[in-house]
Image (cartoon, rainbow, N blue to C red; front, side, top):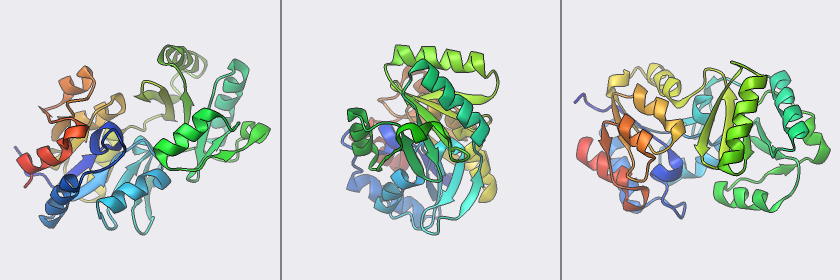
Length: 266
């Protein structure tokens, strides 16, 4: 096994326990890794606002964060943007128009601001989970204000499969569309995924993929696991994620991140 020089870690279902917390044991082991010179980077589909608190909990200093599943690389403390790729305002407008025609729930992420149409119960739930305040726009939501980091549609998985199929049929080859959760369908710029993201991150910090450990649990982590020199799936991960990994660690509620870092890095 090649020496690990960078660890990229997904948040939901990976670093975070089911209650959204991070254990002291995990913090301690990641700090020990940093003391050995290893770069620890959060790699998430979330925005800066909702990832920042976890970077601070881990005391990562001005480490890079891979946000929007690779669409944005931004440093934690200085907020320096090292890379960004977005969906054009025109394409985002076409997507929200389709959502309106089909009566789909949709939300946009523009300049680290979450925008939704209506103040509904699910919005409160989403705010509670992600610790971010949504901007309620009303009809203004359907006048997209700028390029989007991503769009997200929330719903029952079977319905989201239909939405995904219609978007792909209406806009063939225009977007990267994937599930970050069974109830979250994410629409990303074409060419954006966590795999490309960690390769870019490695280039920025002069670290080869063979020296990167990636840890994840869901479909949007698959490309990251394939790109890393050493890939780790959580015990709570979907089977396809486990199959793609070099190693399966304990679950997120059993401090699986701490365990694998202790075993292979410390």
